[in-house]
Image 1 (cartoon, protein in one colour):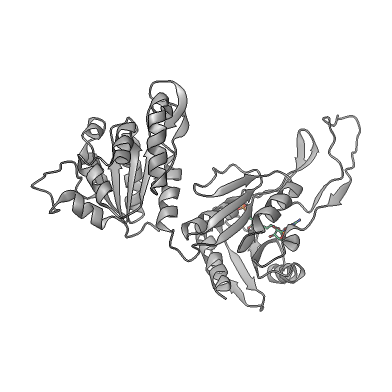
Image 2 (cartoon, rainbow, N blue to C red; image 1 turned 180 degrees about the horizontal axis):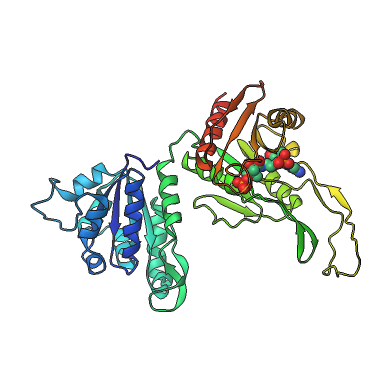
Length: 395
Ligand code: PMT
């Protein structure tokens, strides 16, 4: 998404300006051409030399810089930009943008550009909550500006409240989402499930499995980056919710069924990467079970098969975590659940399947075509699966 794109990174006068250095660095490492524009106030916190060194590109800060490589700085930047990101954005710059004021390189560039603009506010909580700031933000949103954050937490003053610059992963996720708006899944609604369901035994114990959610989250992010509107139905995981994705948190298989069936009613595709417990205790004890007997039996009942129940005009992709006869067992699931595709993981290897950052999968389609992918990062696996979903969606 980011490679070879020109991103104008506007940095304004906030203590969070130092975080923009890491953002510039990450974008540069991902292959973007990052043109940093700094306001005068921003230069009180970080120097242009820092950004110049990180991005390897000139930093714009003066409206009338005779040494600049651009003829008229802001016009050139505005034209070249695929995206403008203002991070951190102070209450002052937000107010200026809302009023159409153009009195420095950054505000001139924003007023001049046809590229999308992402704004990541950072300021004191009172300034953020002030009605004037809220009205300015609402006005900019109406005009298509995309806001990310602010986060809630400890501010530079030591107080706790809203006003922290959004986490870098959220800003990066929003950048990918905005750049991918016209992707091959634009206008599509994709539902993804992730993580391992937890079936309650009593208030403190559950039956669970080793799914980390990484595969499902990667699919959700990849689909978002290709322009889809994504609903991620997630069983408990340690992962941060991806930016720009609607996340529905569930715990049990029954809750996952309700959430998936609701979300997929209007969906184009459902990808069930979750490891759903096949059984649940017949009844969860209301109080903690005491250690009073030598042996304890739990009566388990079958959980509904979510994929099989998700009928309708949508592409359905299942996953199979197998430890033997991988292709044969996956094929049986594909047929049994009448799926369009099944993605089989061999879970016997430590670098693939549960918990790993990489996966080695075999994709099998309805016609019986089998494609084995090499060991790849889960995000890359996600894109390969989505390539197939895109092909199926386009008939
Ligand atoms: O989360 P990670 O750590 O990244 O690991 C990823 C993964 C290994 C969990 C994932 O890639 C995976 O393989 N998920 C499916 C796990 C599985 O074994 O599923 P299954 O064979 O029990 O079910 C087959 C398919 O039916 C799955 O798509 C499952 O989501 C779905 N299913 C299963 C049971 C049920 N009651 N309802 C369902 O819809």
